[in-house]
Image (tube, rainbow, N blue to C red; front, side, top):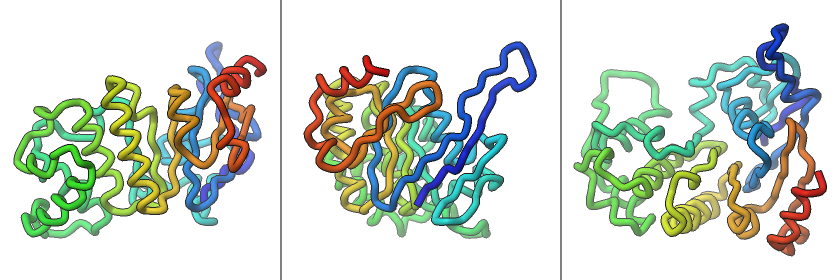
Length: 251
């Protein structure tokens, strides 16, 4: 599904601030896997997502999606099959536009540009259906500006916007980090439901140990641009918080 082959990435190359982050880095993510990525600040977690989404281009190596080499493909082209939800709820939505207008932007992302109307109320029924699945009452707020929603509601909307065109891959870049603990639990549960319901391939970065234990089919721990631990299946199911903390200490 997703494959990084011998990727090399150096920031500020040739300067006194040169920083080698990835060197000969390889990773394979299979169709339908829900991968949790953990690691220290600066480990390369968000940069990994940017490499996959096209926001960062490696100096060496290849990035393949469904066996196709997309290493040099522009980010906006890759966006047709990759969706990303960021840490800040404000990033994924336009505050001065209504819920309907935001959803319409996301819904039209996969379409070719034409003279059709950007907002079509004929889509309202579908929008209300997908919003109602969240159980947050957002289906009642189609005419409400997203800037007037709570952080949790905006992040839930960002999630729906990311998934509305059924992307090949969903990237969740610490998407619960800016939320209060109770709201974070709700968004995580909704995230898990959407991923399972769509049999979605997904990668989620988190520092939340309980979330890493409960969700996902595979857990990766990164440090200094390397995968130090890669755990899946029965081994992951048996993980405890103490196990995870011990792993952090060992590397």
